[in-house]
Amino acid sequence: KNEVEQSPQNLTAQEGEFITINCSYSVGISALHWLQQHPGGGIVSLFMLSSGKKKHGRLIATINIQEKHSSLHITASHPRDSAVYICAVRGGAGSYQLTFGKGTKLSVIP
Amino acid sequence: GAVVSQHPSWVICKSGTSVKIECRSLDFQATTMFWYRQFPKQSLMLMATSNEGSKATYEQGVEKDKFLINHASLTLSTLTVTSAHPEDSSFYICSAEPLSGGIYNEQFFGPGTRLTVL
Image (tube, rainbow over all chains, first blue to last red; front, side, top):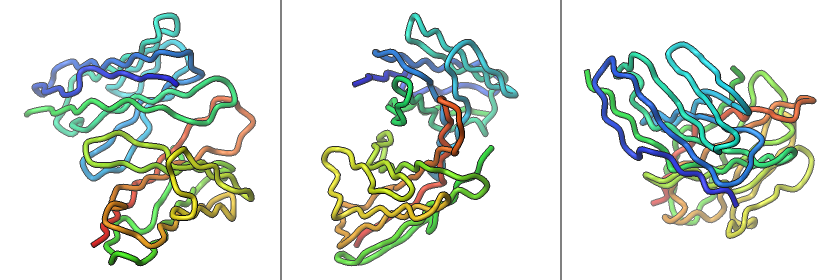
């Protein structure tokens, strides 16, 4: 079973700061997801990565397959970025199931 | 991105009653849908994998007779919590995977249903 570790568990930042959230996993995967969960509970899929780097607006996600590590970066953070960010990994080819990290709670203060 | 809806968004029921939660993919077809449960301050736990036209696959420890799943069409899966008890109170989330020829398909999540059993 894949073990997914996220760090930090909690993060408080001032508006405008550059933020990094890390995710490490123990077993080879076919894809890694970064998800955002707002206080109301709904989940939004931010990225799905299998290699390299993806960028969407102020969000950047990178993955290093050899090191079994991914990072989510938020540039010019804003209070509306406050949410729980969850890393989830998917097993080998043909595997549907996701294994979730415990999440990183981000609070951005004006 | 693709949209997944859930209904209802919240429900309060009495102990012993049954509650049905619907999960719909609004603008795509999904052969596979997933049902998750999330307790406060914890991450999502997969309950079952639902495949259109066949029986759901339940995770270890999840009672299939208590959590009935029906995936009758490519856009709808339902989860029925039968004879609900207070310990079933939780946030239930579904996700759907688009029908496509690719290997690495993205899962799209519904907004969740908060169930409170009194």
